[in-house]
Image 1 (cartoon, rainbow, N blue to C red):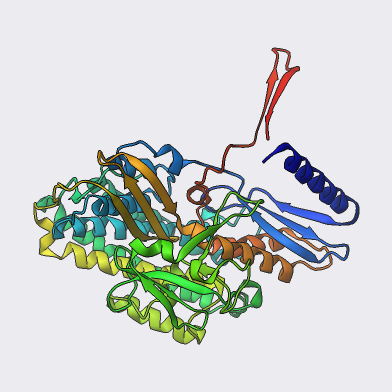
Image 2: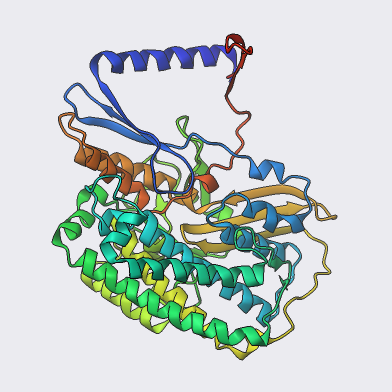
Length: 509
């Protein structure tokens, strides 16, 4: 930004702030809680105490796409898994699939199935994290409960200590499976171009089969908990289906050949707000359908459907805003590939009464249905004899060029795109992260919730939590989503002497 433009921007910013100081109010929720990453919400009220506009701002900025340049492509599954400590397996797997495409090589069946087993274990334990620790307290403990109780301890007091132990033990066992194949659970080193680094030892199979059975029981138990505590509560049903948490947008998710939900592989399918198919395309055509928009008040990029163009934060058939994540995956599909999940899928749409479901808070129920699907898929994989094959990798021989990998992360569609020179050194890296896909809809959700809930300037603590619930339902990961590097970072450094007197101040606008 040149000096004249910066001066104009600063004067306009000061004028707006002065106006609000004199005549209006600003309500700030900072930091927002129970999510991955950091963010804050600014709500601007007019002179009557009504909401003019609410902004969800992501103030952090990272640069993974830029500092990947020049690195060997084989390092990308390890580099990108450092983007986030909560969903490293999703980035690791998307990068490994991008390397398959880059080196034009397919993993053998055992290698692919080991990847799927690890990935479904990750989906299961990550969804359990959100259901019981992040989003769940809003329903299990209650949206208006004191903040000190809306946490995992409050959940344990509500569901009982034995259930709490079961949740913790189930997640630990799933993470041990990931660590067995990946070397470690936080930043696994499993995926290689053409396969995986470790196979399954026969003596471990019995242990994993028992884990799979227990895991499926746990998923069904969670489904019953959700139905008993949430869907049988008429106050919660009114909250979930209210206009404060409803948007009629497009939806996107990955599907198999029968348009059923698939976390690991398939094509991306987009449906319109009325549920009809808008597009279906392979991952390597994503640039024909997805584009990114920027706003001056956030480091998040806002994805939109490229053929429709950016029309702002609007909804309806003409809008290019779309959603990903559990509810979007169910809306964009024709069903599930496993029996119990299909039954839960049918109950979901029959109960809510329409497809697609546009209620943002219904993401919580959709997430539980996906837990059942992940658990059933784990059972299928550990009972597949091919899993024990020692043929787990196809060595690449082709010259690397361009590779695009996609998986469905817990928070939605995740795309990794790498291009290299003939030596395999990264020349271009582009990451479309799940929360970026959702960013426009999340911004709309926060704004709508604030406008529906705040009146005459009355803002209680419980009401502010209900505004946070509008973004929390998406299970956003702002640490992953704020990865762009737009020029340089605004920076202010103050130097003090030993007596703590200010000596010098350095400012980079």
